[in-house]
Length: 407
Ligand code: DWN
Image (cartoon, rainbow, N blue to C red; front, side, top):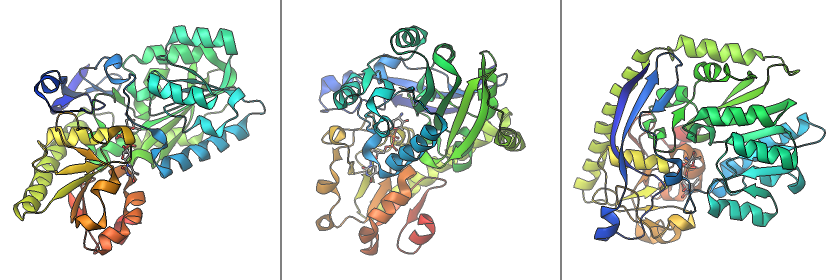
């Protein structure tokens, strides 16, 4: 039974960066209520109201997976690991974005699936066959007929984006070779609870997985979880290794270890999620206080990273252009637009984050790249600049404590 434990209020489509703020645009802006549920039977954490995938994943999709060095290195590492496992590689990626993962593979050995047409164009141009479609059973049939079965199916930050998980797993079951592996990674609900990173809840994240929940999901298919890993990416992710039930793969000890950890930390109980919701409310108040104090001393606050996650923070905490003067982001097609719901202008780092501007405070929208950003912006910190973050709790990072934060 689904129980609501958190209400993050009226929220926009996180990918809907606005070109202008005229009356018509604002009147057409889409909002929905972001409420989060825990299923007491399956243990799955999901949004109460799913937004239609076509509204979110379309030809205007802004996020570029290759925009971070951390993620490029991450994809290189997992590609090498997977390539070592198989003599002949037949790889399928579901949700290939701009090709950050598949660039590590030979063009002939990979098939990509990416519903955002502007992204599929990029990888097709690079020479990787990319289907500009949503993954489902029908597409798995089409690809199987044309390209055969696959021994590596990879997906990063995509499976959690799919409301109807049945379509995913039926398609996987259909196209995975008997000795193949379906490897996917998504933000881990345990990390969200631990880090109080409530901004991992937004329209695109239809579900946030635990191993407990995934075990229950996989049960309905001819599949088993053979291994699981905890990752540092995106503030804490979980990677599942799934094979056919009859495959040669033995279930690794990690699976029991992680399951025990989740049970020990009560991830199977609604009360854990209710306690989290209380911490989220406190986090909102504390962040608002920090921002108000800085503003009352007439300081500018700049946002660093127009992340989709930060849309949840800005809209939940009522933060708009009165609090955050503007945001800087390296993604070209977010620049010169306005953030969804909060309507804060986005600039390039060159224009909005240079020494001449004498900025003293920056809100870390891309907190998941904290180390990468703090290292890159060490001169800003040495010159008296500070970062504000809300993860795991709202605080200021400056020259006094920066070394501790980078460790
Ligand atoms: O799952 C998803 C993740 C992987 O990507 C999607 N649903 C949507 C998107 O979410 P996000 O926007 O929260 O992801 P990131 O990867 O945290 O976004 C980082 C943003 O920050 C990018 O727009 C690039 C920007 N950035 C920057 O301006 N300077 C990032 C770094 C590291 C920097 O130095």
